[in-house]
Image (cartoon, rainbow, N blue to C red; front, side, top):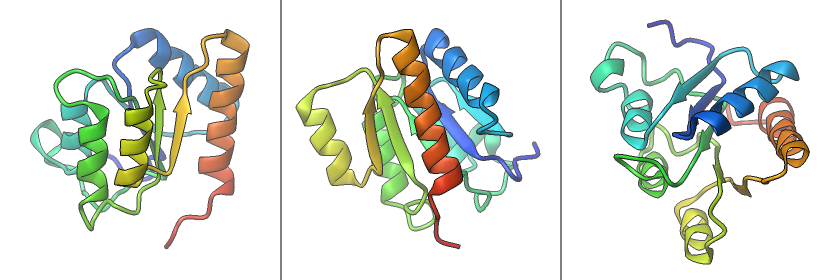
Length: 146
């Protein structure tokens, strides 16, 4: 698998939200290469080059990870915990993109080191703007460490 140069790891189990998010990012030319995974276990396998992704180079890190919280197998909070507790991956910007407005989720994500927490807007136009703004900031404006 050629995973060099990818920009976003997108962990989202809802097919509608995933398709819409990917479409918005591509339509606005905010991402050239995106890896979409459908559950937390697959996200961890990709990030840490295990299982199906054991052939990839773990050093090829994304510019950002878009992470849903409510996913099957391993939830987003556990994925975030593992990313931010590993020296190889803790500097990857993680944007939680979720429907959860629950205060304990928000507090726990920030305690674990999330870079941003965005509640998915329900209205189509507002959702499109939110995804566009996320892409503009994390892929074009944010300056990550070398």
